[in-house]
Length: 322
Image (cartoon, rainbow, N blue to C red):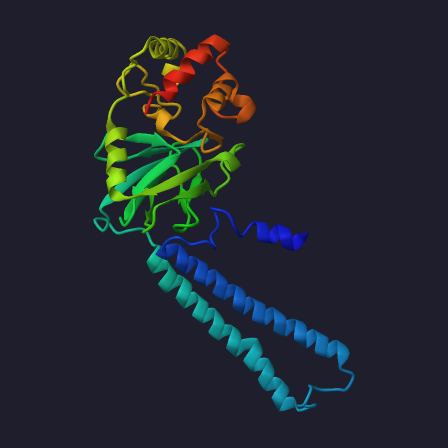
């Protein structure tokens, strides 16, 4: 049972041991190397214990009671080899791995994105454009991306295990990490620093897309929201603007300019909501609007007391924002 539980943590799409980039491969190689060395040391210690327990004759097997040999073995295995191994691990970890996973130098990347941690969601901005999204980071494949990470409240930690190491997000400071991958895919990320009640539900995803597809996504994301064109959508927009929703969220191109919750300008194009906690479906959106504190206790969105009819108007309007 213990072995099954241990193995259960080694797979999935948020595993450090499932590298999808050069930095993460170096991290995984270091981990495997340290595990092998530790395993050899552990096996040697167990072997010595077994020999001491099973052997009845004095002295070492084959060597007997030769004090000079015993002293030499103590020096070699107790001092020389540990020092050599530790120095080797130090060099690999603090020279090779550090260099490959280090934050990119200014001007060394073609693209920078700004990720801001909140309790409990991720705000993502693309400097130089009007694009703002939440909990879903889009990057082009084959492009070095500089992630500038800050926080609006408490300490958070930005981590995409399959792509690179974690970095802390400390109030009043900024930190950087490189994201890069050659292959399209979806890579799950997580806050790795306890940040409050919903720390475990502060996840996000990195969508790596072909450069052409990414450019199309970014151009659309930079545009203001599409106008409501049908009576149903106009009714939903009116209900949204006349309720507290507009005071907490921004929908660019409308009078909704709130800065407390995520930007909803292109909400309908996202695959999830509530920081990658729920799928973005009409049913889940309705559940979230009706009672967000039941789903994610402690988050900043209150239950607004909207009627089922009002929620039924808002949901199709939000889903139309693509």
